[in-house]
Length: 281
Image 1 (spheres, helix red, strand yellow):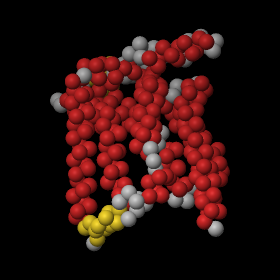
Image 2 (cartoon, helix red, strand yellow):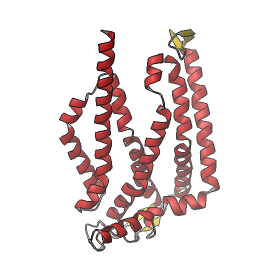
Image 3 (tube, rainbow, N blue to C red):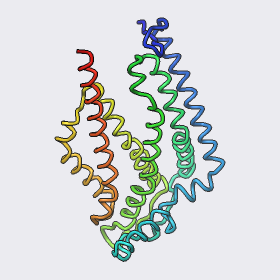
């Protein structure tokens, strides 16, 4: 099977076999892996700060989010309703290599987060030659926007979603005689999906933009299902936050904003396509 490798102007610069494409992909994956390893080394150098201040940060009473929420609560005249106390949950490791496994995963995932722009750039370099000049023009700045949205989502997940989730489960008890004693593995496996999931969730506007470009979704459809989308956001926020309305609003507003940005981008795409169709006719 032969595949064409396009140049930046949309022309073919020669045929490449399927195996040659696999070899090229392997090169990009290898470079991405090297970047992740370098990121992991950086994490290892600052491991004490990473573990105590970042990984265990949401369990400390001086975590930045708690101070901001406390000040906001007092300014709104709510007293200490939004204030969160230090989490009084004991941590333990029940496996021989439990702490080592968590430490290795911290380095690996942290290295990936640090290297994310470069990893995505390598993926983009692999797919870019197959795009036409028009497609390249429409995707200008994609590396910057994907990286910006990813890091914004990671920060939102770490400073907003993770603290709410950890505080909720630390105080949740079905009986006073049952004490919460977490394993470090379960704690890590709880907050990491929230943080990375938020990073991916913040890609929603770009995903909707490209789906609108290929005609899969439209602004009219997004407006029509908006109420269902908001309901899903409220349900998710209700699960991960304490049972008070203000906490749910704090988590829901950014998600709703991303949804509205997606609608706006779809409108822009539709207007541009109508203009191009009119010029073609």
